[in-house]
Amino acid sequence: MLGHMKLVDIKKTNISYFYQGLQENGKSYGTVTFYQKLFSSIFNMALDNGIIRNNPTKRALDVIEGSHKRKESLTKKQQEEFLSYLYKQDRDMYRKVAFLIGTMCRISEFAGLTWEDIDMKNRIITVDHQLLYKKFDGEKTGYHITPTKNTHTRKIPMTEEVYKVLRELHNYYFILHTEHCVDGKKDFVFTCKSGNLLNVASFDYELKKAVEKYNETAEYEIESISAHILRHTGCTRDAEDGMDIKVLQYLMGHSNTQITNNFYNHVNEDRAADEVANVVERRKNKAL
Image (tube, rainbow, N blue to C red; front, side, top):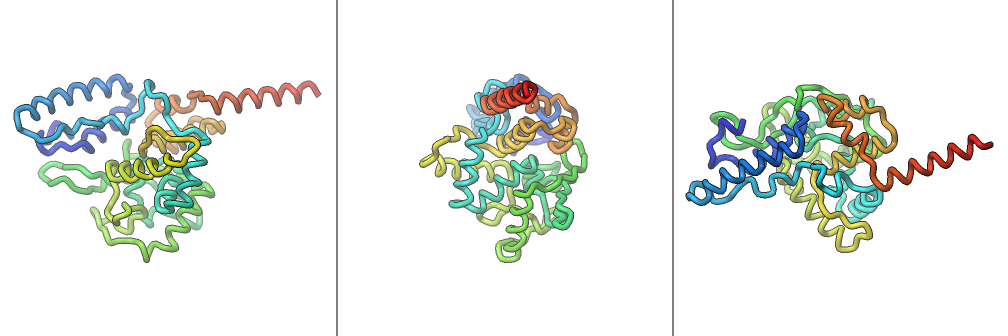
């Protein structure tokens, strides 16, 4: 899609979506950074020649996770403390963060959810479309509804926490909601604090502001945050608890297990401590 856009029309969000697509299709972080270097050089030339005012590749990699980064997800202690802080200080952001960790939705899927997709009785969330903020051929940059990546429909069971978040949202929906209609979709579940529709850039901005406030008093500070890291966090927690890798692949919406394996086989300090404790306990039981 980038190849069909004019240079002056390309925004950071367009490039970030392109990078996310590469990674979701199994491309390595090294491949993504190759494109980043290539694009950065092209846009720097355009900047030097006065064609554009800003280089949209700046920080476009923020939504992408690579093996070189020290943290791929929040630790259990960070997750617990951050959610506890948000519950008391910023209920709107609490609901969004708890939902994203609990469902592992992509931010575009999360932004596109409507109440028609929510089955509170059976506690099922249907994910069959996404809300993108981008430019399509012959149109201005704006919001559009498209199929999910890989065009697969997922039925995500609600955890108890996710159910509580949605129940609370539904109780206040007709008071808090603003009217939006995109390609026939309306009654969006989540919006920005301003009432506008969500996209990667707007959500990550609100999330980072929340983390800055949290870090002022936090015992377990968070160095970096994004919607993508919340998705990683949910996946990592389920992997730590031994969820079957094929189920995890389905819930994440991955086209193959190669990407899921990066989470499933990831070992951090907390997971190592838990596994050692489990081994010790099993040895004790055998000795009895």
